[in-house]
Length: 186
Image (cartoon, rainbow, N blue to C red; front, side):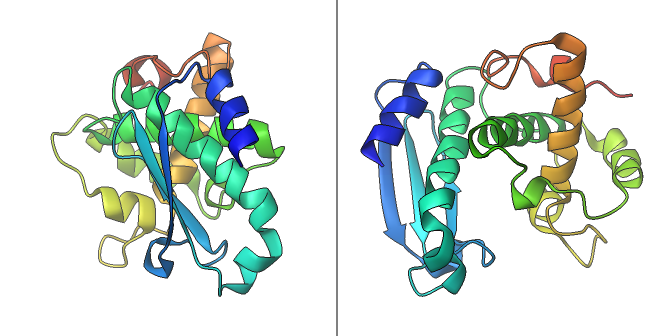
């Protein structure tokens, strides 16, 4: 993992990174047995569940790409930040997923469309720059708000894909691009 950390940090022009690995099943995606969180531009945590059969079967592939995803968040934190609005969160997660997908060679499970993205986009558009939005509902799902699990990840991936196609470049070259440039209201 150290070699992968060095390789990924170099791709993102990152120095001064702290990585912590914790055993904490509550912070893991059940389908993977791992998770990640990057609260600042300088540290990230990866959580694992070594008792999870999915983790046991796939950790050698999934742990490095989870590291890639979280390292991209660190890079974004050092620029415009993760963000306070739905548009900014969609941009941050979409970019991190594009970087992760480039490392893994396929979409992460939470980026794979599972519903009507056009209908979700219509729901999201009026909220893009609202001062408050329910992050957990948009990214982890909410029956009360009728939002499917991972809706925000899927929308973020798709909207950033459109932005990258329009602008050219990739998740690394646009790590500091403002969300309003990456994700327009169309």
